[in-house]
Image (cartoon, rainbow, N blue to C red; front, side, top):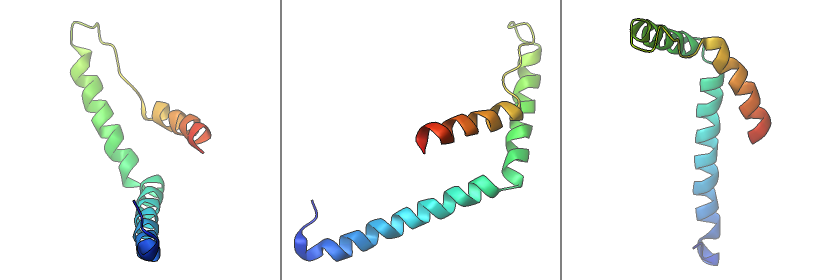
Length: 77
């Protein structure tokens, strides 16, 4: 619980944390390398799944994630 005499200090800490999260999210959203990393991970997972008992079912493509991000940004914001 925030006490009145500590309010400014507590709010400063909270605002600082929100700014850090906001900066991190902006960096993730604008990253050029992150989609490549996810694409590689998806390719490896699809390859590993290709010869399995599931009949070569693939998981996701990178385009699926991009489309999902549009849906989630609409729902969340």
